Image (cartoon, rainbow, N blue to C red):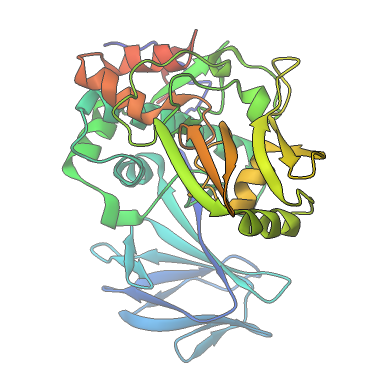
Length: 367
């Protein structure tokens, strides 16, 4: 398909700044063929470094220690020489590495990497490479749009993306695959827009039948492509419907640490929504008949998002335990990845997948 060019959205391939680590303890880096080290504060000149093999990197009061050499600077950039591969604690990454000392004494490592190189890792980190190619292409476009949106939103910050579920999963070279590279190459520069603008193309594992409006989950202003849709394609996911069993005491104690007193629960229900933009909340009915309520996402995070898979659940008492039943996995906003898999398996193209999960979206060629 030919996509209309919209260079004003992103004039060229963006270099993303991905946070790899924040630490107070040494990190091991290797550069097989050396690197150019450039201080980013002061007027010191760049210097070519020889091969580095598992060199310890740590912050100290007077600068950054690399191996046995102290660099009296708060920020450094290591740019691998041609043919060199950057590794951080054994994981390989493309692009360069910025080391930044923080005021609290910690050391931050940021991978500066081109968008398309970043996406080759993200697509396979987010989805199995064996899934239909059109599903992988839809994932590539959604991930590209999300990354560029965050790059603009956080342009003035030290980094623009987290390398985990706070944004998108990014594992460097280890999660690249021939299929992810094919999907990224086939969609190079293609992004999703609404009203001529980027928007955060959220996605999640499994919606369980219908996606949620973003304003209900994240409290952001309503956006038509994130308004929620019926899915109908994610029934093969093992999280389409899920169950969990926890002791009532475990639930009580975990929620108490989040600042809420649910006491000895008999059952837990979702409170009905009075308006579309209302946050989801849960109602806890205690054994003594009294009630308590709290935000559903706070409850879920208190018990662990890999235990309570989504905010759509209910629970009833069974002896000393609470039996949870719910649907979906994740925040349930935007593209359902298992639904995208189902659509791809049925012959839908990437454009159709994205149009289904992001109503009224327009796909354009940004670069």
